[in-house]
Amino acid sequence: MIFAKTVDAREYKPIDKHRVIFETFDSLGKGEKMELINDHDPKPLYYQFKAEREGFFNWEYLEEGPEVWRVAITKNFANE
Image 1 (cartoon, rainbow, N blue to C red):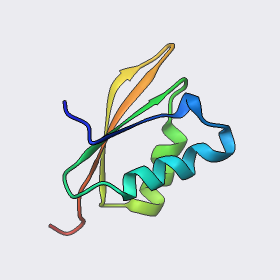
Image 2: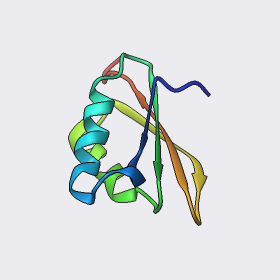
Image 3: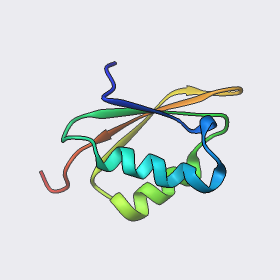
Image 4: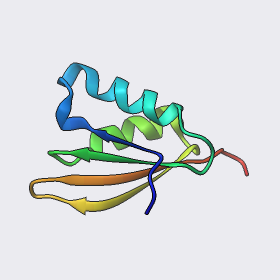
């Protein structure tokens, strides 16, 4: 799988994580994927994506712990 960008959320302070992730996602072109790496299940982030970017993303777990979670987030456009 080829990623346009990677965010390793473990490198950021908790207050900055979601902002950096959304900025990175928003900078993607249509069809591009980003890799998210985290030290816990980012399920709350998924629900935030669903609330704020419904129809504009696909979420695929690549690795599900127990030490590392990896998610591929693909940017798409709603109603296509």
